[in-house]
Each structure stands twice: as C-alpha cells, then as structure tokens.
Length: 397
Ligand SMILES: Cc1cc2nc3c(=O)[nH]c(=O)nc-3n(C[C@H](O)[C@H](O)[C@H](O)COP(=O)(O)OP(=O)(O)OC[C@H]3O[C@@H](n4cnc5c(N)ncnc54)[C@H](O)[C@@H]3O)c2cc1C
Image (cartoon, rainbow, N blue to C red; front, side, top):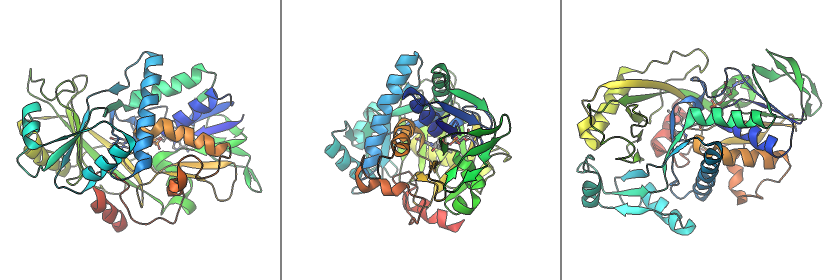
C-alpha cells in the first residue's frame, strides 16, 4: 500500500481520491463512515466564498476548489453546489469587506458593491436599516452540499479501486523516523509507505502530546427556522447565502425545503466529538432570533424546524494544519479546519499530495505556506467571520 489516509471528512476524502487518481494504491479508513453526523464535514451544507479580506491564498484556493467541486459534480451527475450567490453585510468602510474587494480587484474576481437602497430593491426581504453600510455580493459564491460531497468523493475513490473501510486507526509500529504500521479495529495492522491523519476534531486525541494545545474543539450550534407556508422568499432561488463578518453570523437559505440556517459564530464550550450530546443551547436559539430580527425580520418569529450541533477544530490563528509529523518523516497531519475548511477540500487534497511528493514548502503559493505548520502560532482570525473577537476568545480556553 502506498498511502493510508485516516479520516474520510472533506480533507481526507479528497486526499485519498486524488492520490488514487494519480496512480497510488490507497486505503482510506474512517471510524464512523463517510459524511457521518459527528464529522465536521457531516452537516448538510457549507458556504463557499472567495472573500477572505486581504488573504490572497484562501481567495485563490476557494475559487480553485469551487471549480473542482463543480467539475467533479458534473462528472458524477450530482448536485454538490447550489449557486445562490453570497452576500456580505458590511458595517463599516475600510474593514474585512473592503479588504476583500482589493483582493478581488487584484485577482479579477467578480463582485458587486451594493448600497442599502439597491439591496432593498433586489431583496426586499432583507432588513437593511440597522448597521448596514453596504454589502459585498459574490455572484460566484454559494452553498456546497457537505455531507453528500464527502460521500460522493469516497464513492468515486472506491470506483477507482481505492479501498475504503469503517475502522478506527492509530499509529503502531515504528522504525526510527518512519511509521511502519497503523493498528486498526477492523483489519489488525496495516502497513503503508506514507500515512495522512486527516482526523478533524479527533486529531488532538490521537496526538495529545503534539496537538492538544494546537487545536481547540468547541461545540457549535446551528439553528434552522421554517419560513411560513407558501413563502419562498427565503429559499436559495430567491435570496443569497450570507455572512456578517463583524457581527459573527452566517447563514444558508432554505435548500430542498429544509429550514433557513443561521449560525451564531461564537465558540461554545469544549466538546467531545465522539460522545458529546448534539443538542443546541436555548441561548443559541435566542441569538439566532435576535440576529434574524435585524436582517431577516420576517423570519424572527419563524419556528425552529431543525437544529444541528457541529464542532469547530480551531487553531490559534485559524489557519489549517498541514504538517509533517516531527518524529516520522512519512506521516502528515491534516486538519485544523477552524470553521472555514470545507470549501477548500479539493485544493487541500492537491496540496497534501504535493507535500507527500516532496514539493518543498513555498513552491506552490509562496511563503504563505508557512501558515500551515504545527507552531508556534500567534492569535489571529485568518479571514473568518467573528474576526478578532474569536481570536481573543480562543485564548480564554
Ligand atoms: C458549524 C460549522 C460551520 C462551518 N461552516 C463552514 C462553511 O460555511 N464553509 C466552510 O468552508 N467550512 C465551514 N466549516 C468548517 C468545515 O466544516 C471543516 O473545516 C471541515 O469540514 C473539516 O474537515 P476534516 O476533514 O478536517 O474533518 P472531519 O470532517 O471531522 O473528518 C475527520 C474524519 O476523521 C475520522 N476519524 C477521526 N479519528 C479517526 C481514527 N482514529 N480512525 C479512523 N477515523 C478517524 C472521523 O470519523 C471523521 O469522519 C464549518 C464548521 C462548523 C462546525
């Protein structure tokens, strides 16, 4: 076996699929299956957006990845992307949205800057009077079907002859600077030339000495409210996906007649991804409603029709972790999605493979790649909603 990938979330599944496509023999293992409800990639939907403030790398990666998601979905004859567009609600000039516009200009990314009157005209269901300076509209943005995406990538991997198993794995026999085998619950030991541990929120448990202080795993509540009977104004055909950087909220319009999703972007308590009860707090529902009152007033009294508890596995600066194990040259640790990793799955897979092939750090995207190291890291927000407040909150755990 050339490569064993442990973890079939978005990062592991794309890594395994692309490796198999490139001709490697690959085993992919997951403790619970692909796209299961405990995995961070296992929710129904995830936003895809190019705006990352002044961060050129994530802007480029998200667009490259979206192209791959779209091509892959077309090849498979499935819908993995809902092209709803994406709106950023800007509270002020000169902040995240304006920085994103400068990056868009440099990378020739399509966008519109919309003033409140234009917003009112285009989407009368929006509340724009309270704290809205302008909006940044990304016509290319939208929603990825997350759980289904993982399952489809794993199915494509298996069709190419990749081996996928439901099994728990941990590092086992070593020889000097090489890991020789993993121990699995299903198949005894398994040897491979290289190993990728893409274990999302389980990484700190698997490598506690190395990663316990690098990745924090927190409970994240998501609330879906149901528009009134016959009201299609909050479905993806009628209103874009949206994010509010300064307020720390994001949301997904109703898709396939599910509810309208609102995520209050603040860290919940530390969370056990295996055994944590996935029941949302009343406070999360209160916060979601308070936000709806401002931006989507006609939904503020809408009933909660679904809830979801996921977990963030966040690094100190919210940059991903893609790093060689310090003791074993043939082992890579991949994760630290930090609340924004799903959309980048295809590009992360490509990047990991380049690193497995020994392409040196910095060759693909300049010195930006240093961001993915284990540490040391400084507090930061890495271009995700919640910004500096989230960076400060991380330090309090
Ligand atoms: C509420 C919320 C909203 C988010 N919104 C967005 C968004 O809008 N856009 C976006 O791009 N990203 C978003 N994210 C982030 C994104 O979902 C994650 O960054 C991404 O899904 C992480 O993928 P992963 O493959 O690293 O981890 P996971 O999906 O958790 O996959 C890890 C897998 O490893 C397996 N595993 C673990 N340990 C073992 C073991 N020992 N043996 C075998 N298998 C093992 C697990 O079973 C799991 O399936 C959000 C996250 C949350 C929680």
